[in-house]
Image (cartoon, rainbow, N blue to C red):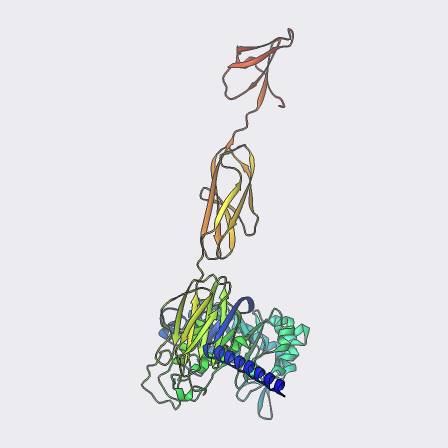
Length: 578
């Protein structure tokens, strides 16, 4: 019995030690960013402009949304509305032009087909399969119109929310498959699937399970209204959707309350603006979405305020100003730019703290959401990073993407997060200049014209990668090589003196060079001169008729050095092999 009690005491002590250690981890928090574990490529963040329901953005609002200067939101995705009335396509075109000019992805979604291309069943508007061809031509006409306005659409979807259809057109999943299989080729643009209002997999499973339909779509688009976080992952897409993009194309976190609410009482309520940052986190990390698009860009509950309340009454908020919800999205959009890749990170290192991380080349961005109403400490480990200085920007109750003091650290950050905040840590890798060496030809080498000269070079860089090596004759580009070993062959090189350089460029945009000089001489033919009984072999450099030569008498079999003067007309010239 005594031994049993002793063992129980030991087990209790060990359990207490384990609980203490676990508590310590949860209190202080430890997150690890694994740069080598890559996930989805990010296209960007943005919103929809629907000018038939809300007026178009003005010039200042466009700049606020799609500019990326101080205080701007840095959006890189714009969704446009395809009206069933072609006469309305010009509404909102100025915003589309501006966003496209800023480098944003512009894509389009239709709500309804034109008159005559739908039927009504039990009071519900439904697509008419007999007019699929006309509908495909309608979508393609919009693509053509936008191109004529200088906007190249990245994609167009087949239908907005075919599974909701209270005020727009309903499609069955099989009708979507049939349309895609039979008519996608008539639309000269990347095709997006129909956009389910709630990420209902029943809308997408038939497309993924039909090889022909799947081959004709480029993007799976969906909305997340009422979708639970646990339903964000999509196993069948991961299994069969290789090479397809996955976009979240519409959501709002709340449409009843003002977008500037930042009150501790609502920290776990959708009305709190910080909910946007939390929702984006889950969309990126659990959903693996490549875009996050808010509905709409400007309204009292959206990214930019319209100066009104839900009832339409004018309030004190200045119209055209960014909201707290807008700033929460900007914590992602301003630094997680198109082409960044999400990498694995400890997504929930402590209670109500959420971490996601992204990289491009050797630059790293880490976004941390703190839903606690008190400040939190966190250690972030980033093994293998080349970053040595981290900028940080915070949105909280009192801050709007406010810059903090730079953190001089590399593979480990110890940070304090403001209460109820989202903070972005931005690390730009220190990029060294490449070291390049020409290994051939040797410096001051000599060649005979017409020469064929192979230039070989090695190039390395401490941070980043070598993207190309260019070969120059003076300032004239001869050619380039994108992969090691770096080489270029220059042919038919005429006589002259040359200085050639190899210029290496790194992924960080820095360059290094190496140069050598060489000479190419004119070919000097050997010549035999016949004069009487003598044969003269000489190296002809000029037209001089007085030469010193090694003279061999063919009759006397004597050899001696003489000076020979011969009239030009008496010479017979013949080139002989050496």
